[in-house]
Length: 85
Image 1 (spheres, helix red, strand yellow):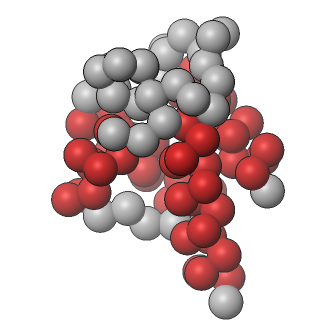
Image 2 (spheres, one colour; image 1 turned 90 degrees about the vertical axis):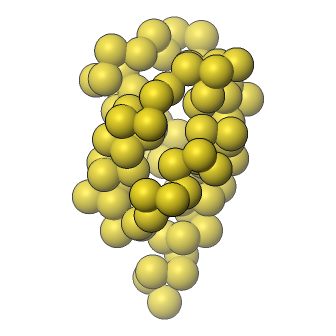
């Protein structure tokens, strides 16, 4: 599932006009990487919720901005497993 989530995230980012050519699991979402703003992180959260049923609360946006792509994938997989139970 990790590969599917990673692919999904990179597709979402590309659709949002982020350059994903050099994106790796270590690419940070925040200022040292993609430099995503809170509205962009909220959009990714909405896309993730629609696809995987995983919800991120508004107050988690800052925490998400500190993650890299790989950490976000792991968090989505973990939450999706909890939802599936």
